Image (cartoon, rainbow, N blue to C red; front, side, top):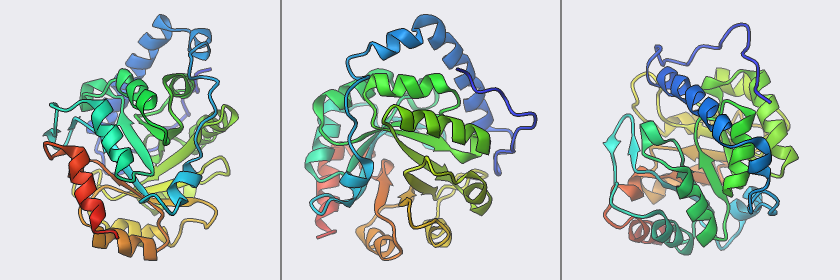
Length: 277
């Protein structure tokens, strides 16, 4: 069920063959090893595999929720260790209680100190949608995401061809998963849209130098077709920005570092949300 490599690989926008290339190269090795350890059949026998997933759209648009996709992230390549002292269950629980519409859990170990077990734990203790935040390059990972308890997968346009996005998204929808496509610029947006997507996320981080600017969301947001949920990712550190993004048609706001850099991420989100009321 592996996606065959395209004859020509689309360039990583501004990546210059650096961090994204390294992550993807490592991810291919990880996936190959995972396939040897755990078969597709074993994944499909998981307790979570046949559960009915939560609707990303329903929770994002729920009036009693904030639209915030609150992220559990210990480390990033650009920032180093953000917070490796907290545990996934109490933090994600606190996020949900503070009004998060969904949770984002990193499962990449080498570059983000994530664990697949983190996703399992978040699923066990919460009743809102959970996004598997990882670098999805193979159909195996989609099946694995469902087996781990995810409701949503992330597809990153910068590392996938349009054909790969179509294949992965179609598989995800066939097993009940929601699909979030991440784009960084207009070229990625225009070539990557397909009907199997639920939401399109604009990553405000520049892949060339890792600087962030929420202006990217405002610039690209008006070009996202109305049938897709609009998500803004990164560079969101105050509630006024969220209010402006809502006025621009965005319904989801992925926030991780702003909460995780605090000793108590759940408390940080509770305090943050007060500014939305």
